[in-house]
Image 1 (spheres, helix red, strand yellow):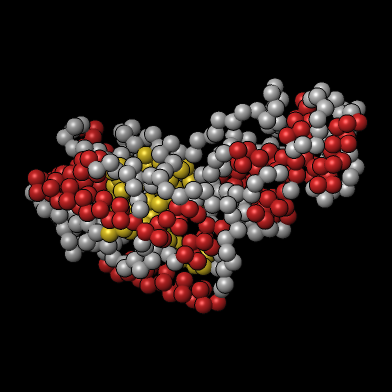
Image 2 (cartoon, rainbow, N blue to C red):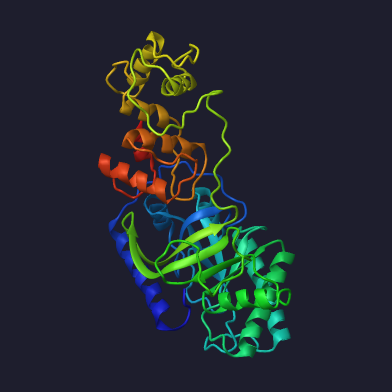
Length: 433
């Protein structure tokens, strides 16, 4: 993020130039994915990737990155006296559109910086005054968030850039400021987040919490900048408490990287997000009572076979209206006939034998939502089962798209000649079915 000096300004200008060049040469089709409902608290629950960039991207860029990037979230600079970039795209319509598209939003407020820093606007070095300033900044951030449609229950992150934590008055004033920020946000029905270098405000917050517990109000979430290239939320000895161990962390692990998705390049910071409840495996009822369809392998089956895999196949056939007979676990003539019907529906050779491609189509059949790391639900279960059949190897079937599932998606995309993005688009669903 780094709001001071030339590097970020150059990054802003570079990003705008890259996007403008791409927009002049690329026509993006209307996104062909089912969008979940918008609204609700931001960023919600997510264990996955997010990016932030200085200027809020235009809608065509957001749509292109939604379809082909690994990112499920975006950090947006909603205001503050030290915000560097203008935000001509950012308004309530933009926010509502991203929510409907399924983006998780991480709102950032860049107000006064540490009293010992060299930024254009700094907070007071007096503890009481700094606390009052923190409360005023929170009130301004809440007003702006409400105007953008970012409602109660959302986490607003204060961007406190790097500063020298050695001067005691500077460190304590920053803690007092953040304490005021946190108390005021909670009083308004919002959650408090703090972004900073892991060795600056994050270290100070952790130390204060351990040695002077209760002296300052601690934020609900921390967002730490540590350019170590690891997409996780593990820290080192600078954060020793367990205060933010329950899905309360964001890690900015790569800075100023140029990435291109859907034909649109941007200079971004990459983040790994673990917030809310994280990405929780869904509670799912069995497709058929007493039948487990989550198999480690889906073997080729034909007449005369029996067992749990046959029963799983019969369950799938019944669920799709292709079989009305009891689930006997025996591959009889009625089962073979139902498999033949499925093969006609899937445009496969009508053999009556349950082949790998038939398994894949049966398991994947259904809606076609866009899925990427962090997504959960029944559609993910369908995906993981279908990938297990299609790849001929076990894929963890738990209803959560994690990094392992994304790698399996990319492997399948390479196998079938699709771009290996790890993102499940309608083209992937079409190929599976």
